[in-house]
Length: 257
Image 1 (cartoon, rainbow, N blue to C red):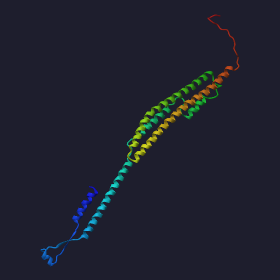
Image 2 (cartoon, rainbow, N blue to C red):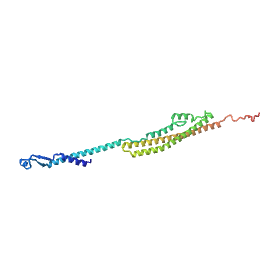
Image 3 (spheres, rainbow, N blue to C red):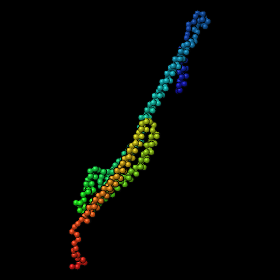
Image 4 (cartoon, one colour):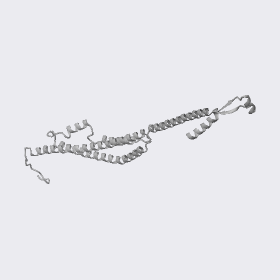
């Protein structure tokens, strides 16, 4: 029922219910004239006051209805603002980060560990090569070469993992943007924005892992080259060092005496 219809109904009810007439006792002459019945007198002042009271009552009712409508709208908006986003990409992002972290943990030979790096450089990349035999020098050079190859292989694996995450990142970003655009309240919009920030964090983690893997491979190769130069100098020193020289000896060939 609209406020206008409600006003008409209440006004009609007020007019029917309110006492708008007054019964006045007749005088003896008037009683003889009208057969003993009292006459009906219309009071305009009383009628106006009754109408004014009904109008004020209706105005109060309309104000209460408007207030209830405003409160209802406010509650609806609050419910929308408190509604949680029905989409979460957190598990996917955590899986991507975990895959990259696991890949870094599978680093071959020299791991991403300060103690392991110190041990390797104290042995395989040490500057003091004078006390090593020739077979030891060859074994050390081969070990350093294997470290460099393993570092480049790990870097390539990390690159492949990061590239594989790009397609999943594109799909996740598309879903989050759609959820943000379709958000019905402040909480949903905020949660969608937080997940987009988490997606950026995952991309930064992939980029950090890639730079770490590439830097590790380059560092191992540079260390190998430096150790190889030191080994080459040591081998050259041994080659040109003065010694007993060549001493001819007799050789038996073809079983002769």
